[in-house]
Length: 458
Picture (cartoon, rainbow, N blue to C red):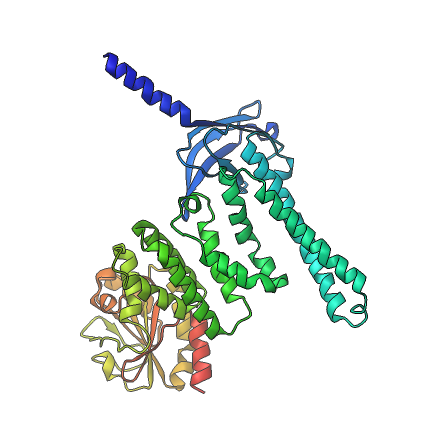
């Protein structure tokens, strides 16, 4: 019994050592529900939800085994971010969480430093942008270029502002989580300003992104993982380079990320999954294909099955490969054309194979657009074949009856043999094939497909 008692004292002693308290006072928010949460990689995680007391006070207890960023959020959906670190009790007060200018940090050294910098840095950035605008006038406008004194003064003021910002970060206690977080947040938040007004900083900013370790636990808990990925590749896309050069730079960035990612299987899956989707949404298909093949060829880590199937599309169904033939034995709706026995029987120069279903909300909007464009496309030598992933004859026929092109369904949904042959993992998915069934294009939208027809099938 004595041993158990000592163990319990030890256990609860450890618990209390790492238990933290967050107290907030917002009298005008009495009765409102406040959620308290933190971040795990791409995702956020709610830790607790509490209604503000009649006296305007809310209190949260939490454990911080590792430092992270937390947030408080109400129905207004405007989060207020906080540094969560051991040995830092947090007390704040203000008018509303959605009005950060009203909030005062009563207790919590790191959070005071965070709040100060969050207020001052944007103002410095605005001043730098304004001075940068004036500097260009005094350099390139012949009316002002002869005035050396103001030009020199502008340059000196810009350097002073930069030094002041860097000095604030340098003076932070290096043991604090905030001393890592603020430079990271600065890197992410400055991207749009750099791309527009300080283009000379683009190379060093890209280099800073490439030096990041995307498996770093501090980044994983910061809420900045998604922002870092988006800012990194947005800057490359908007760096003023040619598209071919952009893809080369993106490949370099992907290679630099994998140096660390291959050492952490979970992070590799999470980052690759998000980045692949990001590149696809931006129609950066050369980069997404490179990422897919890079991940699939990596032998030191195992991809989860859903991600592997998604990426396998690029290896098996990439541009230049020959698509599998499709037999139309039954369950075919002909539209306005004779029913072919198989896909290879079609003799037109090009065929667009479209995968979709009546239960797909996007398909309900997009496939009718294809039907409207079909007369123009067909007149230029392009046929359309729709492969339905519906599960019943009734749903299939009700959806495709208005369409003027051939439609086919084997009622297998995701187990459809055709969908598996084409490595389809989402709807709608499209493949443009030539007469030999060579994959010419994997259109990401109807607009892209129509633009291709207008450009190549004049």
